[in-house]
Image (cartoon, rainbow, N blue to C red; front, top):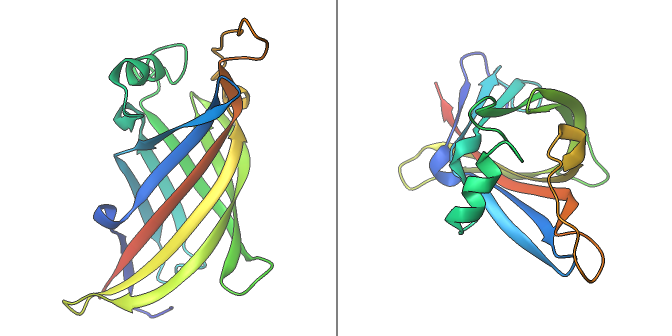
Length: 178
């Protein structure tokens, strides 16, 4: 996928960033960030610098009251920390063909930690208009308390309202330019 004059541009209309977290110790609540950008610097997607910026205010869990709470100081504190960022450090081959391990620095609420994500290269394809696309799927998990997302409530029956592990998943497409 390397070429001298190739530029890969993030395709937000064919990409998604989702998460889920345990609720009341019995089920998961899902959500997504509806606005995010991925900047690729380099012509080869496997060696290019990758920077992700997420508009935290775009969080959507299909419940406006919960979304407002997540935007507030108990969780993301969007007023003081409007962006969540990820800077990739390395993409290394994984255990099977098309599988990779992406390592980088995730920053939430001013706290930066090294994290890893499993990545699957979906391949290259041409859309009906002749545009070449590249697709990737990714997944991984973080402990939200590592990033000062600490709010919780004890349950009368034992346990807590919100689990600490947050699972992320996504689909990312890039369009070839040049």
